[in-house]
Amino acid sequence: MNITPKRSLQTVVLALIVIGLIALALGGYLTPVSRYILTPLVTAQTWLSTRFQAVQNYLDAPQDMARLRQRNTELEAELSRLQTEIIELKQQISETRVLEALVDFARVNPDNQYIAAKVIGRDPNPFLQYVIINRGSDDGLRRGMPVVTQQGLVGRVAAVTAGAARVQLISDNGSSVNVLLEPSRAPAALEGDLTGDLSLDMIPQSAKVSVGDLVLTSGLGGNFPSNILVGQVSNVRSRDNDLFQRAAVQPSVELPQLEIVLVITNFRPVDMSPLIPGESEP
Amino acid sequence: MWANTGAQRHPSRFYGKALNMAVLISIPILGALLILQTVVVSNIPLLNGTADLVLLAVIAWALHKRVQTAWQWGIIGGLFVAMVSGVPFYVPIIGMLAAVGIALLLRQRVWQVPILAMFIATFISTLLMHALTIVALQISGVSTPILQGLNLITLPSVLLNILLAVPLYVLLGELANVLYPEELEA
Image 1: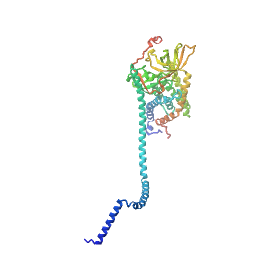
Image 2: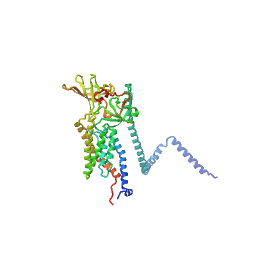
Image 3: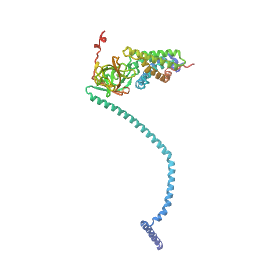
Image 4: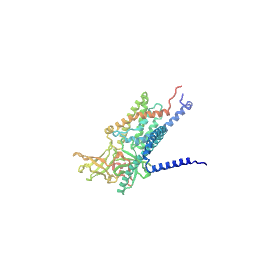
């Protein structure tokens, strides 16, 4: 191996130049020089990179669109599922609130035994104010049992099958409930109407009745327990030449919007027909 | 010539089967309509009147010219309503049968304009059904103000029934065409 002295000198000089450049760079003396070199390089690199990305985006776009559409469909499906869930949960919350109120009502009135029932339909005949509930004789329901909500009296069970019952609302044209007014304690008869309105009849002329008086069941006649709230007097019609006063009543229960009701199962209505002379005679 | 090959040989047997099928199919149809009536339609009153889907279905069925099971539909519809409603049980049954009678009478007389017959039958049958209800309630001791009932219940119900008469007539017409296919000329 022949290494000439001239070539060795070149190598040493090159090494010294490299070492010198490194030393200058480490010392920061080459920064202005590198700036002049790198600036056009970076500019060119940026220009090229921008164009390359544009081309890449253009080429990738259809694939991304398809993926986005698929993702969009998935998210829409998820959204609709969540919306359905929200509606169901809201419904459950609403039902829970009603049940909570009914449980509170049952706690306040511990003497009575209740069965909660859901209103599942209304009478198809518009002349009648009846609702159909999803509890029947299998659940212990019997004809004549009073039906209430936490707000007050609803009606009474008119007919029972094994799994359902028909409830005559107090607003039915054929319904009549013996009530008394608070604070006067005046007795009256609460009657329904074809339009679903409630009115009071047979209020003695001597009784002092005013708007806002509470209407409670009196228990007379044995069809309903006493002291169940029915509503409030909203209008009084009193004439001197009438035998009795009349009044309109605002029911405490929103009868057209009934959802869940309580049936009082330990109340047995009294059959008074044998005591009425006309009905007991053959 | 009969529409299908089996019927070519035994037309009476074919119509016997269609008759049975038409009676059987009335049970789910009238049942579904009754459920719809009690759950939905009764909650959408006009003043105090509501439409009567079962009555409309029975009338629409009876008005189709090849239908032979109109009376059966009337009885089944009446029984269904009687089971659910608080009116005395004979009211819906008599009312439905009367509606079928009116529809059959009109089918023979006004056969060229069946939709007109549907409107007339709906109008008369609704009035009749409500009149029967009022009479039955009076008999059972419930006093019913007739004028108030007419203004607030019967007339709005008639209007709603007439509005729903056309769609039900068309739907049941399609069903009648399936169960009683038209005779084809040779």
